[in-house]
Amino acid sequence: MNHDDLRTWSKRAADWAQDYHTHLRDRPVRATCAPGELIRALPEAPPETAEPMAAIWDDFTRLIPPAMTHWQHPRFFAYFPANAAPVSMLAEQLANAMAAQGMLWQTSPAATELEQVTVDWLRQAVGLPQGFVGTIHDSATTATLSAVLTMRERALDWAGNAQGLAGQPVLRLYASAQTHSSVDKAVRIAGIGQDNLVKVPVDGTLSMKPGALAGAIAADRAAGRLPAGVILCAGGTSVGAFDRIGDCIAVARAAGLPVHVDAAWAGSAMICPEFRALWAGVEGADSVVINPHKWLGAQFDCAVQFLADPAPQIRTLGLRPAYLQTAGQEEVVNFNEWTVPLGRRFRALKLWFLLRAEGLEGLRARIRAHVAWAGQACADLRALPGVEIVTEPRLSLFTFALEAGDAATAALLERINADGRIYLTPTTHQGRQVIRVQVGQFDCTEADVAMIATVVRDCLAA
Ligand code: PLP
Image 1 (cartoon, rainbow, N blue to C red):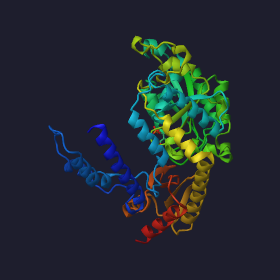
Image 2: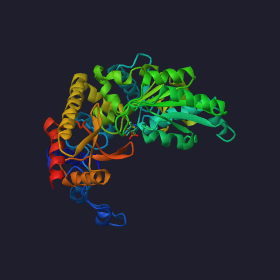
Image 3: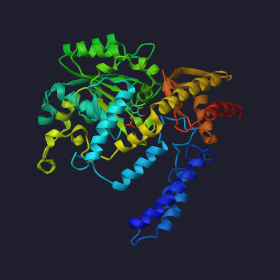
Image 4: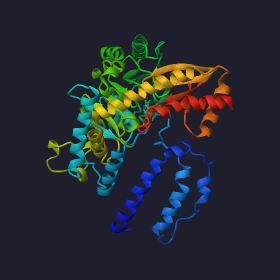
């Protein structure tokens, strides 16, 4: 394919995309294929000679969409959304066309400077104070890993980077069991070890108990271990738990520990001032991650990490080998020094397009509607006989179960997802099997959300 062919096929792809999105409601949300079905439909060996694009295209349309779970389906209520506003898709197409690699300012000045500007726009939008700067990672997992590596090195005065972890004191990090598994992954990768991630107990509101945090830090110090940092949860994945951010940060500060706040999902809602009480005190954090690729609408991937002071992270992750040196490097930002990978996609473009084309008012209206519709869906489910709301809505996430018990709840979930009109996913809460409902898909309407109770009622009657 040359660039003339690319133009022809890009137009065809645009037409296909329009048709795909127009008819998404006609498709089952969750893929219906069996494991291995696609593998069996494909040749075992790669082609030796070039194939015509028409053949590739036909195979794509025949084989791929039916084997997809449709994340942009307006009735996708599973996990958290991976919203792709149409304008952010357009920006991705343009970024793809330029196919630049923005590891250094010099390798793509616009990518670097637009990242600085859009991250600051988002900072203002969510109400973080001036002084926070930030960068865009692929995922919240990478942002949290970067924060954890920085905590490790701060605690060791950067001896871990230099000498490795053998012979160093035992490091300890603190989080509640409501935090996302990306924190567990980060402590493993960072060589801190799962056993040294202390799961601090939560109270009845599912917030980490600040007193228990203080006690755990003191006990570790008394035992000769080295506390390195605290990770707080602002909108947990399972049931939307929020730590009392300000109170927990006060404990961490008193103990001289840095704090990372995981607001990967709920951070987008902070563009609405009325929700900011949920993370009150966040301005005291050292690091905060928000995924605009979840609820806000910047096509996956786009995870923004805000930093009160980037210097410790740059000292932890930044390297300047001779082949990456550029003239005037002290006057510019080279974002590869802030992140784990060297190479960087031009992710700021889609955030810029999104913020401009939707405007903060447009984005706020959507999030407010999702929260209101989730509240209505919760009320509709509560009214169904045999259905119990297990956790009340936190923003737009709640859980329910059947009074008949775990097996009945799990069987109901299978029936719901086999039905195809909506897609929900499971979790456990306090040892109980529950079904999660989150409302946040970019194109969903009130009628789509009302369908949740309709489908549950139909599946209970079946
Ligand atoms: N933190 C929270 C609260 C999440 O819900 C998720 C994913 O759903 C993550 C972190 C990990 O996000 P990512 O897929 O961007 O690594």
